Length: 325
Image (cartoon, rainbow, N blue to C red; front, side, top):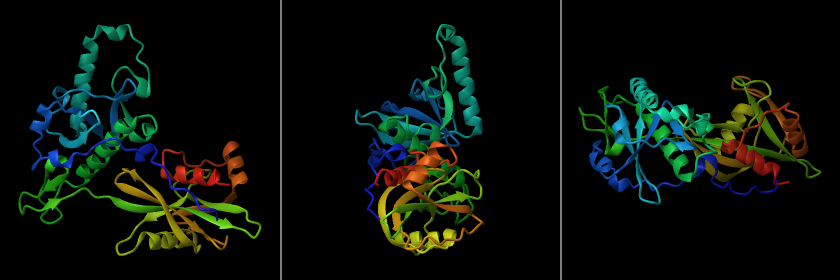
């Protein structure tokens, strides 16, 4: 196969924030950072508060008490940001404050509110809907607060003692007050693979799979989590064999993308398949199909196949192969 280029940082992989780890402090008290003029970014279960084309940037008076606060870092202009990961009660209280403020503002009656990200008033949108519209600074903040917020929600008790843990180090650690142990955010590595077969005439085909949980016309690259004790390259070979009973060779790293749904890092690879003989596992993968470039373009154009968009590294890798003919 013709080697694919490395994936450029796009969508969720873009980065524009200095995480400024030395300013996180020794515990979860962020009063000094707030006092320095930090701006809050609000997150609730993977959705972000947005308005007027970007993240809604309010002030500390809007932050409900008792919420998880995470120091996210500073932008190139030196502005510092604190992510506020809201529980259900916290979101309800913030929504009530914003609704009351909206009711007091007579200008709302004169201005078209807009919709979605362009709404003149704050609205909640999932991170997936924002990945390609936010700028580099704001997408960095969004991915960071969603990923760390997900971790806080899932790790509120110590795995050692069962004691409720408390945030520390600017929201980047949870500490067990009983034994003093510290617990850090987790990231689960997963490989995602462009599998290519080249026939005797030099024609390349890519293998796409339909997950058993998806609609029948939705196809994507094969992927899976890295297991303890294996290299990334071995994970590529193992996962493709498990899902497609297909042997692949020459795994080649092409780039990565954070995927905070809830806490993955997607590691993109290409691999070569000497044979086109496969057998879908039928538990996770319902069906598999080989496509030439022309076949895949035609299937996407006539909407018989839905391929991943470039919000994900799956789409970026697949389009890289399509454009590499």
